[in-house]
View 1 (spheres, rainbow, N blue to C red):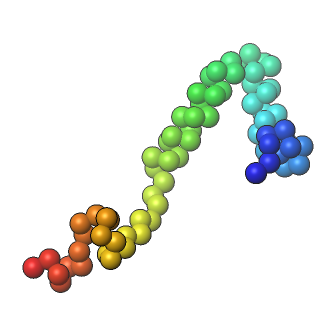
View 2 (cartoon, rainbow, N blue to C red; view 1 turned 90 degrees about the horizontal axis):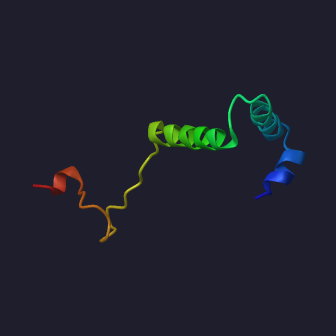
Length: 73
């Protein structure tokens, strides 16, 4: 994983994002703290609305107590 400064130098999309955020600070639109809060909230929103598949191993004795339908009876 690249350090942020290295990524800024080598990744044009990341560089554009950083430049946009820096411009917002320079134009006194947002403080650095507000930008950090906004970035964290965006990540939280993304995580809370993104559905991920859950893989369960029915043979795992420490997994959830979920059994195949025909064995519940």
